[in-house]
Image (cartoon, rainbow, N blue to C red; front, side, top):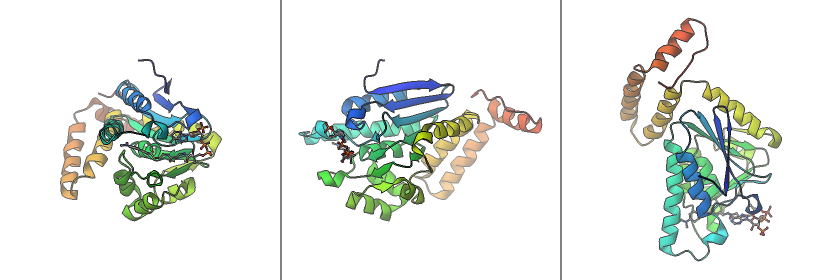
Length: 258
Ligand code: DAK
């Protein structure tokens, strides 16, 4: 499917999806959201890590497209929110690891998109925030929920109620991003981390990703039971046998996702 608002590039096991509307700071229109959704659905099985980023120097994604939002009816707004949630859900449920490389403003729907990824890394100049209340609306793509889970309810409330943007070091101190890199090094640093992950057992990574996600909605006993069950199941895989054998034979494992 040809895309107009996003760009896709492959580099070995890494697939990079870049929102490509730099003139409007990569704002999320309905078309962008549909194209991201289709691109994530079409990630090939042999890609191991998906990196989401924004085109240009200034922004990851500066939020939902404000021009498009003007005049939406309540029903249309609900539809737009559902589309944003569908994209978030698809990213969270993808077997492969997803990383947001936040190369500038990540605001509103942009921060919500980043928070749907497994890991967030930011450039030093990045600024992150949920400024929706400035517009008289609330975060509509999961921001009230994912931000509170990442930084805790109090700091989430502060960010949402004040609409203030925080800088990348503050985001790191709050646990909202894993790490911060100089602007020019962000993408290469993130690709290096992606390659590190891509060398691991893919079934193990997918299982660990699923457990962290599902476990958050369970009590500890149920979550640990699910881990035990999944741990046992992984022992049916060729990769578990290969990984353990390779370690004992002091060689690099050759994982095949089987
Ligand atoms: N939408 C559309 N255009 C945008 C935009 C956005 N979110 N952000 C920036 N632009 C455009 C600007 O209008 C400007 O266009 P021109 O004037 O050149 O034609 C161009 O990008 C460059 O921006 P600036 O000239 O403003 O650049 P500055 O460096 O001066 O300022 C800024 C950068 C990021 C501080 C500023 O652009 C800004 O405040 N942008 C808006 C940030 C924001 O409020 N984003 C929206 C957050 S609310 C929903 C579900 C979810 C959501 C909404 C509804 N429903 C269920 C209905 C989510 C909402 C949000 O994301």
